[in-house]
Image (cartoon, rainbow, N blue to C red; front, side, top):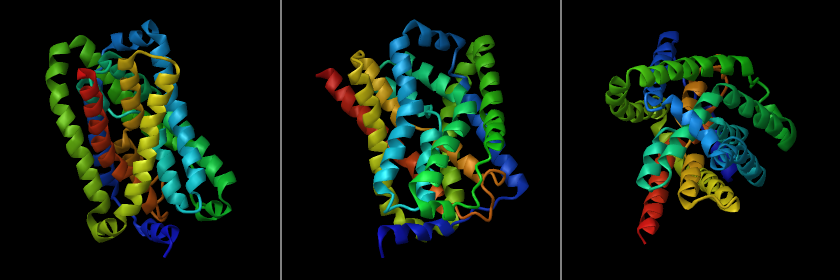
Length: 317
């Protein structure tokens, strides 16, 4: 069997939640995003304007460079990956940066202030840009890249407004409350923020278990195909950040930061969107998207820590 035929078997995976289960996941994610926002101070947004060059390059790398590179990679692999795998790659690229990038930047001895600023801005903009980027690049793929994709995805109507509503509720409201708490109750925010980081990791693991608990054998059987795709995709993401930072001759610490920020995505948000039956109907086989999104969340921790360790090592030298 070809790689395409092997991957097509993954799409049969379906995740069915009751309305109560879906609401519970949404509430928990909103709580997680509230915890992320506890580490964001209003002053962090000022840093974007105080050091505009690095901030602009970082934002461009995440919001434009990564989706573009993802689309180019899909063009290269179009005869080897299924439409749902391709859409999973696009969904990951459309998500904002993950908050674990701040820790990795600090460990790498990068510009932590810039990292927090980029995470704050991209997460805030995700309310608009995650739905917009997914609709834009997903639409280009469905309509122009692969004729077979149009047939395979004929039931997938990207509901931008529904996605906007979901992202606004899950990100916009918790972020606002978290930032206000950080500003007016800094001691409370500091205590809760550290605990919430561990809770965020536990929540992601839970979602992965929910997604593949009943399909573990299938996951193990085909993980190597997804491993290769995510490996290349994530490597290109990291390379995009590093290349753009180097191209614009940014300070070394800022290059480290943008590299890590571009390679670390909030795939937990992507999974929650996939679990939402108003965006992705239960009858639609989206196993390929689930595999890519879930494995990215596992792999980017490994790759991010590896890159951060290398940066730290070379900093000492």
